[in-house]
Each structure stands twice: as C-alpha cells, then as structure tokens.
Length: 267
Image 1: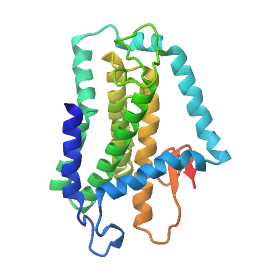
Image 2: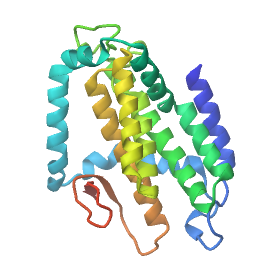
Image 3: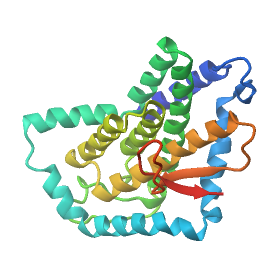
C-alpha cells in the first residue's frame, strides 16, 4: 500500500513540476519534464561503473573495505544497537523512521515548493528527483539480492536468497532516500551538521527496529549521497552552458571553499 501511495505522489509531482520553476531567462529548465529528467539520470546511474577511472579506486576501495567489515560483523553490531529497547529509544526510533518515510519526504518537498521562494522550488524539484531515483534504484537491488532482515534471520546476516519479493533487507530504502534528501539540502543550504545527522538517525533507527543490518544502512547511505550529488551536479551543468560532460562528486576530494569532504567521479 505504501508503494502505491508513493507512486501516486510521484505522478502528482510530475504534473506540478512540469513547469518553469526558475527565472524565465533560465533556458536550461524551460519545458522541464520530470520523467525525462529522471530517465536521463537513470541512464547515468546504470552506465557510470563503465566510466570509472583508476583514481576512483581512492573511494571504491575504502567503501568496499568498510562494507566487508560491516558484513562480517553485522550480527554483533545489530545486537548491540537493537537491544535493550527502552521507551526513550523507541520514541527516538519512531522519529527516525518517520524522517525516512518517502511519503513524509515528498510531502516536505511539496511544502517547500508551495510556500518557498524561487530557490526552494528548485531545491524541491532536485530533492524529488533524488528521492525517486534512489528509492527505485534500491528497490531493484533489494529484489535481486533477496537478503533476509534481522527479524527473519537474527543470527545469520549473510542469508541472501537471490531474486525475491519476500526478502528485501539490502539496502535500506528509508536510509537511501534520507541521505539523498540530506545531500541536496546540505549542499544547497550549507547545513551539513544538521541534515546528515538526521539521515544517520534514520539508518540507526532501522537497525534498532530489527529492520536492517548495519551493512544495509551503510551501502544505502553511499548510494543516497551519490545520487544526491549527481542531481546537484546535473543542475549546475544545466544552468551553465559552458559546462560539457559530467563530474559526479561522491567523495573525498576536499573542497576548501565549502569545508566538506567529497569524492569525485569524473567522466
């Protein structure tokens, strides 16, 4: 039922955003079409592995290493986070789960678009794209991996059954959309200290509620940041006719101007 509501909201947003949402002289976004833009982004998501360069191993190797460590220690990490359960932790977890709900995130975007200024409308559009793209991408991985959730296999974190509609733990859907949304908001409003901790709360809440393993959350966070950054870069390119090609930033290239850490995939 939740997925049907999510898809309905997506179609509603398409009808709303299928307009010029920036200044009239910004020709890059005249005749904007949500589905065409998302389709082009998905093409980039699918093909980017073939375009990686040797220097990209600077991020791929550490990410793979952390993922391996988490996979090996998922059971112990899960048990340490998920218990004991208290009323206070239950309340905090409920907030985290709420923040990770795609319907809440899309509703927040609708509010930004409706009551915000020109910038908020652009941010709302970018955010909807990132939320939808990350959510759909993760759903595909979930079905293909068929990993059991902790509540279904608490002592075996490596229980992958292959293609399955029943088991869908890997990666975390709540976490991926939370980090995609947080990336857009952090980049646009320079509030990394606020939005990334909130996204982290979503991931921890999913582990606490027996819904995901730590590796589910970490991989989802990486995917969410990547797709969020991709949308930022695409917007910058579309509003700057001098740019040609794309440079997706998801990582460790320190940018002194913004004082945050990023990892660049350039192609």
